[in-house]
Image 1 (tube, helix red, strand yellow):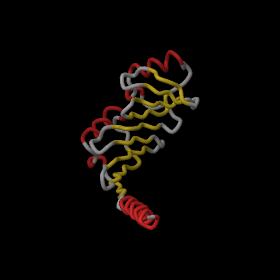
Image 2: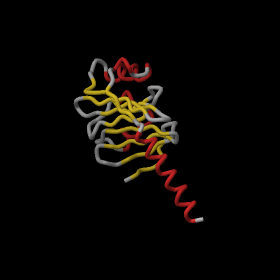
Image 3: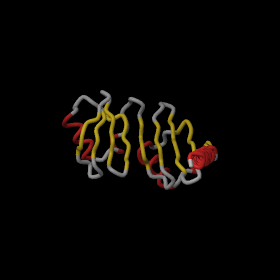
Image 4: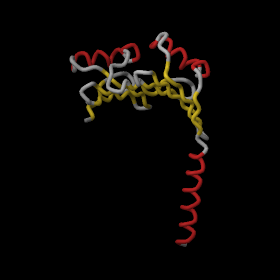
Length: 147
């Protein structure tokens, strides 16, 4: 019985490593991004040119990462919807941040700037210039502070 369990574990581990080995990262041009991602970049970053754009293809998914020369990074899903905007400790454009979240931060953390925002199925997670991480639901209502 133990041998069968070991064989199954070995097989599953090999399968996982095999699938991840098929991941392929390719540098692409801005025009190769999905339309939603191109619109997002044009709307929030104007004519600012990315340092590079990566297409990360895996067996079951494709993601895109755009990095600007100032190290600001944006991650998009396969449809070109943004998943994360990371200013790497620099302020990110307020036009990206839902108004309710921006207002909450402005009211409760006046001296702080939002340096990162991530959207997940449960809501938004933001990082402030002081290092605090704030969680909000999808409507932009404050939930909690992570430290």
